[in-house]
Image (cartoon, rainbow, N blue to C red; front, side, top):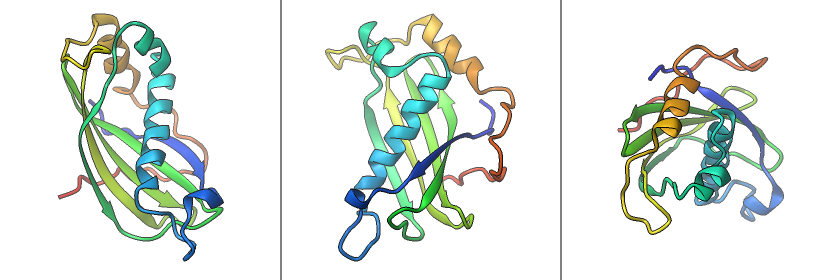
Length: 154
């Protein structure tokens, strides 16, 4: 897989913030989920379509490293890169930055392909091919976004 990131823009809502006006730590997982969902949609395999085909990708591992705070109304860029994929699993790394290009979070999630019964199964060939080819090239970068690639958490 190429290290060309998929980019998703996201604005922090008031509901995601603590009294101290920073995003509550667990809410970042929701933000990563939104970006990952958009990744699948743009790849041509929306998650609802996969679910209708008895294919889901539950998270089996997550690592996040918090580097700075995001605050209410911040516009964030979430970068998503596939770093590992075969017919049974897929790994994403993420970088979240704000409009000042300050890194907010880096992270990684690992997923297995299962049916709705949550038993591991091989990814259908058409799904694998869609995901494998969707971001192996260099899609046009979105305007005004840097070419920084999320670093792998240690």
